[in-house]
Length: 151
Length: 195
Image 1 (tube, helix red, strand yellow):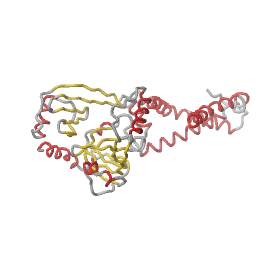
Image 2 (image 1 turned 120 degrees about the vertical axis):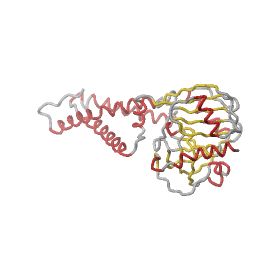
Image 3 (image 1 turned 60 degrees about the vertical axis):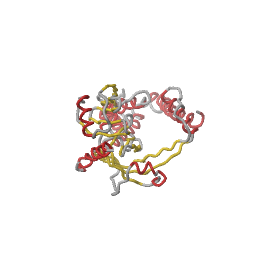
Image 4 (image 1 turned 30 degrees about the horizontal axis):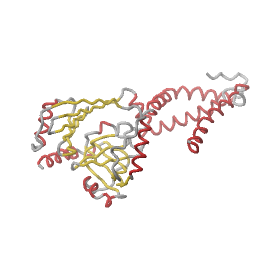
């Protein structure tokens, strides 16, 4: 518990740096109120289709196209997906404090859809399709990104 | 290489050849940049055209997750001696502590002390070319890329009218232009309706 609180403080410290140092991506941020990542993931139906502002750490970045980042906070992570070519996040953003805005999307993938995705991925990578991770319908909650500021 | 039109040629053909020649000169650098980057990005499924990624497994003494975060981080740093600037730390779950440095990410499994060091560095030259190709800088680069696209249109159109006679657009040129058109058109029709 102590560790979690201390880490939360540690995570939020970079966010206290003056906003002028932040690198801006995409559209300017407009919302004032922030929603916790854990709150969105716990109540996806409540937030689906709504525009939200979240704060956290960039814990991962798409290394191929820079078309997504993962935002971590409260021991949870959410994917922040942007349109290819509209925003390109650099790998150097990893570990930076981020404030981001976008629309929450919730999608439930059926077993058939997941298998089809496995096949598509396998074909693209010239590998054999691996269905071992397909176990029933899968809910994907992510933020369709509009803009972000990363320190 | 295009031939200079004869002295008796119509003035517009001279202008056409001059525009083709000079726009071509100006476009050489950007054409190479976009073409090289295009080749690299086309095969993105097979390799990462932007970054060289390295992973290394290391071992440190197990850490007690009940310890304060600051102490945990200090102990991990003392053993790992990471290079570069410390950026932040994150705990994705109870047993894992991630340390983010500007050159690498250290994922530490606290109970076992196993560490996965994940480092990425930009590929020389290619990373810069890809960034320009994907218009990462935005702002003025958007205008430059638009001008380059217009230059390519000008090059292709003026190129049609460089030569006259049997090797010009109404002779051999027509066959080559048709072949060039047939490839994308034919492929798209095949892909859309038959594949």
